[in-house]
Length: 156
Image 1 (cartoon, helix red, strand yellow):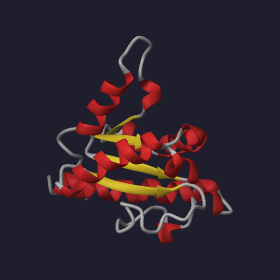
Image 2 (spheres, one colour):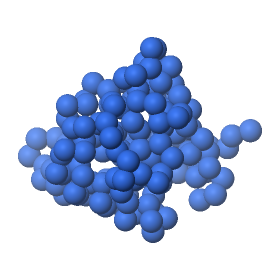
Image 3 (cartoon, one colour):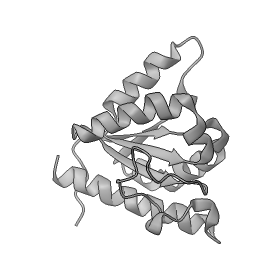
Image 4 (cartoon, one colour):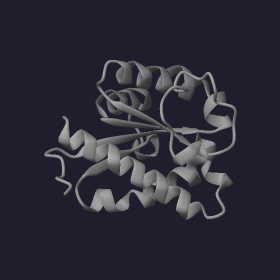
């Protein structure tokens, strides 16, 4: 039986703004974990006006236990996503300070990328947009994230 973690696990969404609708859908599919008090999600659209955005992103990127890389051509083309967020995520992953999970949103050649050796979601690395039923793809990703959360809860 799953024992919820003693602390809420922060999930950081690293994504290109062109993929905002897909990020929103993934967030909806993670709602049950939020309602159960297991996770909290964070992305840059939560930065309020007048806040120094880079500092806020760095703060959450440096404290999240799970970092989701929402992979698409736009993500790989974004200097900020690739050179800043991805680089820091991989540093934290290699130091075992965070779990980095690539989520393949759209078809793109990502082989050889810094995250290329990490097991992606959804299963078989089939891009979400290639599934006949996108809800099935998002549910598969949510189940994969739940497993990671359970692992973190049992092996802090």
